[in-house]
Image (tube, rainbow, N blue to C red; front, side, top):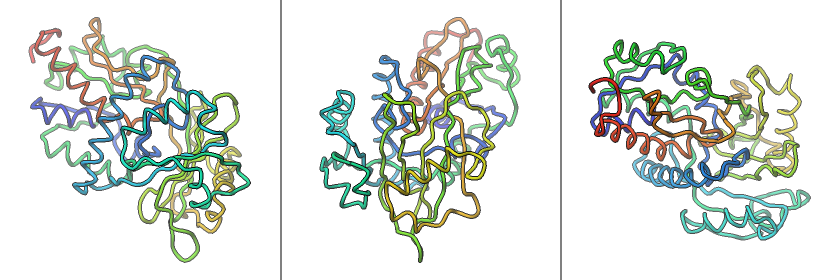
Length: 354
């Protein structure tokens, strides 16, 4: 949807074709905390993609910052805290990430005392920490705004399932929907549409009430990244969704497709929840949301991470495999996709008239 909006704002006539829209898509499940790559869930190994993603991420940071100032529904700038059980200097990747990040975000602060100040359990063993202002997205409100904005800019929205391979059906689809060029932003669906290997990284968030008579009010995000030296689930992800709701995570289960898991039938979700409570004991007073205790989604991954390119053979712009960083990359990838479309139009690199 972000790509469609950016194309429409640049003057293109756009039709969005999808078999599902929010709230029935993974975007509403996302933790939606802006993070400098790699994100807390890990699984970002391709150095070329990682380098490109930093530009996308910075573009998104600036866009969300402007949107927060403009009071776009669901967008806020809040302090985000990252904690470590070792000095940052002891891990070259952590040190490199911190040094890159420090000069690019608002309000960067490194202070091990953040753990005590924010109520982190001293037994957890935090010895270092830093924080900065970061975009945090209430996905339910934001996705409603995004759809309305897309429609307001004249985008035609069609509910229809496209089955692959996409290249073989491109001309038919262009004829049917009055288009001259196809941009594929199909997430895990791209595995079928392009015939490429992809895998899900299943995630889950427990939703708890933020504040009220029983629980504390958490105004900032609190995170511990996955340590890729070990296989166990170790992420801590505590993020205010809005003034009334917190999301607690996280889970990163590779090649797991079943989304019918919850606190009752999946022990790793219970362990994830208990890990957050052990990390920040005040959360034990927070009440689990009775209306929707857990949300589960599948992050779209491939071994090379994000794909954003013009495919000359398929004559399609592909923009997929954003993994656990969909919101963090969204505006940067969308703008680059617009550039690819514009280049294709200017160089007439497609088979049909636009």
